[in-house]
Image (tube, rainbow, N blue to C red; front, side, top):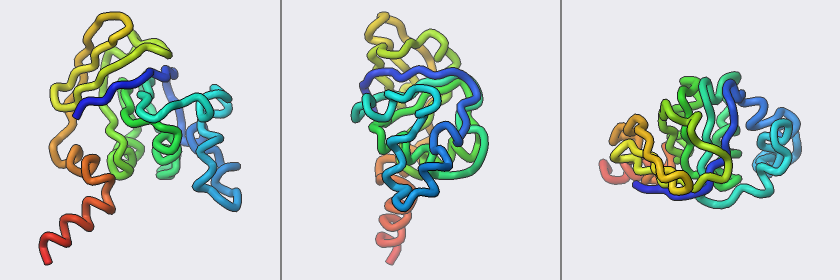
Length: 165
């Protein structure tokens, strides 16, 4: 699976409160709260993010609560791949459950906002088309990529159990 898109670069320790603010979750329609995603760091993120864009961070992305809304809001904004030097464990798994691949990439510090990236998840490779550089990243296990290909954990399980019956 290959994804191309514009990079949105953020720093380290981005927590789930920044990705899915509590004010969005307590509203009458939390599914529409993605417009508040990262509003305290970059108020333009949700409105300017496009389908297929790539989220890039440093260490410890997704620390905080286990709320699934954090990767869901990123997906609702258009993010289709997430790169970081490291992830909080629950956030990492929630990403795949919601069909957003999360790849560990030790060289995210070389990426800037607005760089055009091409991520080859099978090869574990990030090509920075803007800078003409290539970075290695961890490959994603096949069972997690199948969950992404099926549209997330619930559609994946429905497909799997339908085959079994």
